[in-house]
Amino acid sequence: MNGEDRDKYLARILKACAKFIESGSIMNADTGLDYIAHIVSPYGDAMQRVATYISEGLAFQVLKNLRGVPKAVNLSKTMSTSEEQLVKKTFYDLYPFLKTAYVITSHAIAEAIEGEEMIHIIDLCASDAAQWIYLMHRLKESQKSPSSLKITGIHEKKEILEEVATQLRVEAKSLHFNLQFNAIVSTLENLDLEELPVEKGEPLAISSLLQLHTLLATDDAMVCIRSSQEEPMHQRTFAEMLGKQKTNPSSGSLLLQLPLCATSTKMMHFLNGLWKLQPRVMVVTEQESSVNGSLTERVEKALDFYGALFNCLESTVSTTVVERIIMERTLLGQEIKNIVAGEGVERKERHEKLESWIPKLEMAGFEKRHISHHGMMQATKQLHGYGNGYKLCPENNCLFVCWNDKPLFSVSAWTV
Image (cartoon, rainbow, N blue to C red; front, side):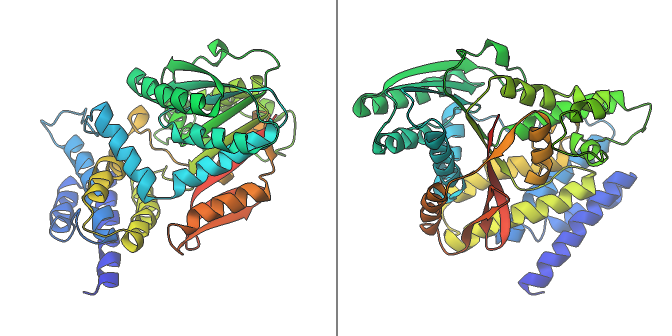
């Protein structure tokens, strides 16, 4: 078979294995996975690499159904903090997505607080100082830059927050910023927004980079419990429940029109809590994919999204780069396996497209904020350094970072 025919064949077998698992035909799924193992490789082309990690996820599903195998299967390998940071830096270096999001976020924040003497930023995942170092340089370029910068960084690992704080303090000193860094050690799920050090009336900005979708795992568990008497065995995601509502997104009574189990989800409580903080701007970056639903649907969506993501590197990075192989195996590969093999609250990778995020944010009280032409131009320059395949596509006051014509990440700005 040529490469294209083999890719289609691989996709068919993977989806067939998923259907076998869903129907309880475990031995048939095992036979299919054994066959797949002979034609995939983490060192092959993009499709072979994606298929490797999807087949590993399916193998976890098979193991869960075999007698004598523990039900709780560890879906991720534990990495040290330094290894985790190194892998994320490799993703940052090889792809332009995070850099582009940083540029757009920084410009949106700088424009929202122009003329203020101080600014407070809440970073919902403070794992990288580069984003705020870029902002500090951007602010210094303006005629009326704030003299004080207050950053509240949230992360579940204290050592990562300490590293970020150290880097920011060094940069702030060189740029003559008065910096205050508040470290909040917490997961997003356990974060108490009312306890954040936010002073009434201060110019506030919020950054959420690939974080909100993790809360959907808790939502899914809550919705399943509450709807068990209505729909046995069907896991209704929050997005699916929203899709059933025939309401006007601009209506102030939207929350009252939704069922109790939808309005009381962790996600809506969290978004409402963010709105109560009254930020001047909140910038949200998320994967532009929808990897929820049945096992077969998750396999199909993972093939589509991660196939494109791996293709980016196929065209722009040498296949012999060791860092790329390690990053794919320990970061993207683990995401894929979590999507395919994870069930219930253990499945944290629950990406949803922007079309699903918009009604959630609007129902919480947020309104879309225009992203300036200048910010888009700076982000476009960032993309040009990574090859011709990357594009920045504006649509409906939001931005999509695309590979060729396929949107892979969305960036949207919001205000209260």
